Length: 66
Image 1 (tube, rainbow, N blue to C red):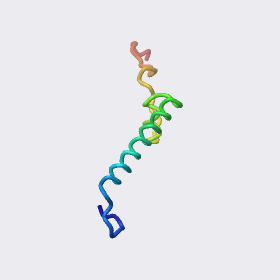
Image 2 (image 1 turned 135 degrees about the vertical axis):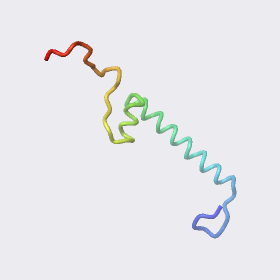
Image 3 (image 1 turned 90 degrees about the horizontal axis):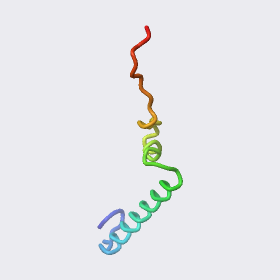
Image 4 (image 1 turned 45 degrees about the vertical axis):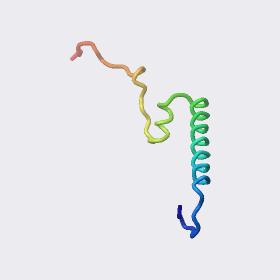
């Protein structure tokens, strides 16, 4: 495969590098989840948006008092 180099890299090296990146990404995600909590926390970091847990959301179900 050519990418800024004039020589072709063997496919074996490309697959090895891709496997290393995959293992490092999954292990980093595993450590993050175990240290910080749930998937909701992960998506808050990725989207840079704070979301409220639907289990803790309070709703009004009574008749209005006005």
